[in-house]
Image 1 (cartoon, rainbow, N blue to C red):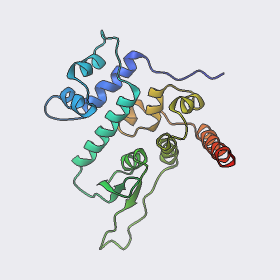
Image 2 (cartoon, one colour; image 1 turned 120 degrees about the horizontal axis):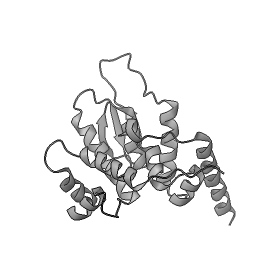
Image 3 (cartoon, rainbow, N blue to C red; image 1 turned 180 degrees about the vertical axis):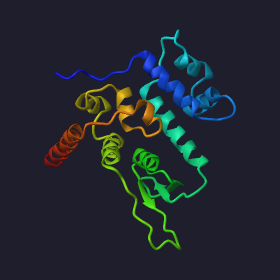
Length: 201
């Protein structure tokens, strides 16, 4: 039986410190994190402290990464040719970075679209690599809510923190783990089977 991929307390702290540090180039990043995550500054300090037994909950870590991704996109004010929309078709923002745009769209159940360029007759469609497509599939499964997070982790062979490593784009060079496409296909099979059972009931 394959070993379950898990993170140690130190590894969770490393990610917490890294992503909090990405929130702002100026001012106190921990204050920003406390405000964004709707917790106290003391709680954030506890998550970052080696002597404190607490770690950031996995859902809060995912919220933190999503906020960092949004803020990173706002810094780039040039060549914003990829528009991001949520599930209802509401415009969320624009960027020139496809992986991050796809992440934000997937987390909102939305989609991305190449912005028409008036004078560019040779503009190409958005190019998504196979690895990006696989990560996007996993994010969409998570967002759908059709499978419990623990069930997804069981199939993927990881804890919820490693699952976040699999789906995040910001910080990928430090913490990223590419999810197994075969395991994702199993999850999709479970979802289809579940839909058939519900229809037959």
